[in-house]
Image (cartoon, rainbow, N blue to C red; front, side, top):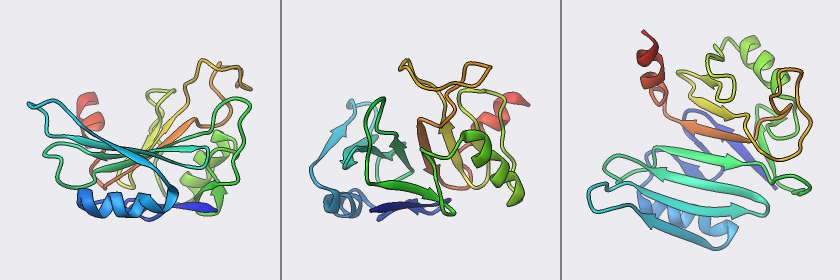
Length: 166
């Protein structure tokens, strides 16, 4: 099975802007899920599920009315999955991060690496995690060779990170 990333529109069957009910219906094809309703003063919601060994968090941030981001997590050290998370044909969790970022630049995207463990592509919007305490192959700089998570958000999802730098 493949989960195709479609930035800035969604990931697999989950679409950005979907209602909670629509998102729950979309992830139900993968199996069980939980919905976490945040505290009373924060209406955000998160749907927790997995597609085999790939963990998926569907975020309904802010008012909690629509999906604002979808985050997918690698299976973890020593675990394998038949599910591929694909970005333009590349398996995000088995393609070296430097190759993913090089191909992104070749597509005309800008990869912001200001925070080495959390690079992102503004406007598209994709965010990557390169952080883990697990024993994994690493670059000479100590970063995992492969990304450990990927987030798909809308075109403006990472604008706040760009503004904080200005």
